[in-house]
Length: 144
Image 1 (cartoon, rainbow, N blue to C red):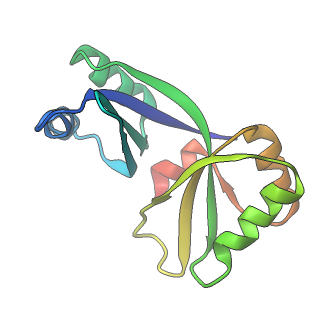
Image 2 (cartoon, helix red, strand yellow):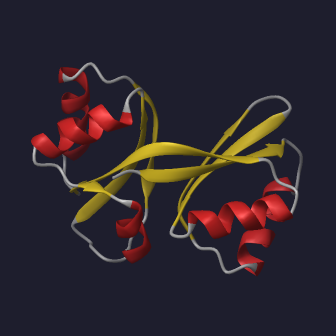
Image 3 (tube, one colour):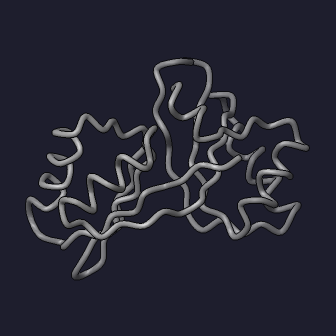
């Protein structure tokens, strides 16, 4: 299972994010999810895409430092308590949550999708599956 997140390191200066998304747009790469975190000198853009290999190749060729990270992407009901159910599974299995962000999809209006970076993605995926929670694969991402 599992989904790969692409993390791109950018200078924290005006226009740098636009330059990077210009590269993605020119290569017809569609971001399914996006997160931006910044520090004084640089930012980290985290994206989920349907074609990880193509994305990392395009970015590398354009001179961007990037790396792949395993994340857990979960489908949940888009209703109060949906996120809490996931977090309870993590707590009950001593899985530390490092960060999370939302994933967009036009395929289902009653579902929400969330990207989780956790201390142990394999244990998290197994625990979520045992709890009857759908964990998405890279192939699922391509279909959203």
